Length: 110
Image: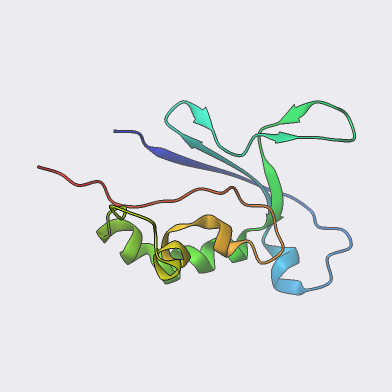
């Protein structure tokens, strides 16, 4: 079983005018097991970095809204319904920010 690790480093948000977004601005690094899923190619430097920047409010809001589904629903056997994707994919929490295309769901146990 792979664990998911959230690493948040709070940062200043110069130029961000919305107070909630500015107060929750941070660098987010997500790892599943030993793999960092927030690795980004930095086009300015040509290098890579392991975190994304943005307001953590959007992530916290998505977690609060969907934690029960993430802990209780397994992956669909066939193509995922759009409603399932809204409940399990971080992409739907982006709201114009940077979050990985990562789906979280319960694993079936026997």
